[in-house]
Image (cartoon, rainbow, N blue to C red; front, side, top):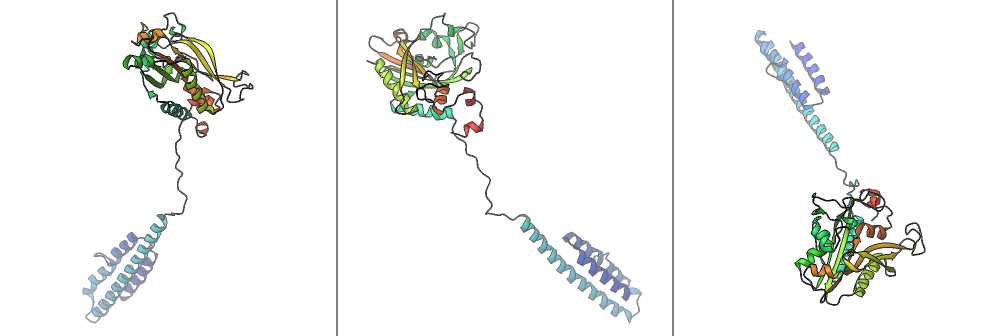
Length: 341
Ligand code: PHE
């Protein structure tokens, strides 16, 4: 029995040395020292021993038990320290490591230009007005003095919402003029940015959805000189102090006289290049003196008041401002383009 105990001892000590998890240690504790463990079962057989043998074997068994308990506790502590160490390594945080880069968004070139234009006009005392994109033809055409036969009223040009052509997606921001003049008394100074829709095929300079900004001034004694001064200021603030403008006669039903305003080519400076089709000038916007019929239609006496109006494409302004040669780039959200502004 003594031999058996010694054998258990050396076997158990060897097993404890190779254990490497807290579970393994616990399993060994049960195997050797548990209620049904090997040492315990030896102690249970002590009844069959002689009176001389019993204390000797008893003492040896106890000594072995104590030795095993100590060794188990030591190994347990070792494993625990090791596990902790491994966790510390695994969970370690290198505070000197460079962080993940946070990408900041930027303003879209359209928003940059729109903000600039708004600032310029707010600086001149203009207010910002808004109007619906789904517009009554009464406001979009009739009250703007647009004859029923005007080509812009064709189904091939305008997105009608109703069969009877009384409601459409506005094809310009000019109906906002009517809405403002109907609701407010002069003096009026407003700009109105927003979307407009036309049945145009997408190409480098057309899109069925685009943005315009309308301007309207109505007061006593407003002249074409005020229109020119205001738009020259817009051009010089947007494209640089020395930018030249050109006012060409044109026709719009809602202004008389009407004009189109060009700026000297921002690419070649007027000498002629591909962008300006070798003309030296780029068309910026349409403008004119508000037609007396439009004023009186809104209850404003044209003998007392006069006004000017203009409408500019915001895509066009952004393209000129930043030298972008294809309008589609403004709608594509390509970071290679947008990251440049
Ligand atoms: N509404 C015109 C257009 O879309 C622009 C314009 C506005 C012209 C105001 C004159 C006055 O082309």
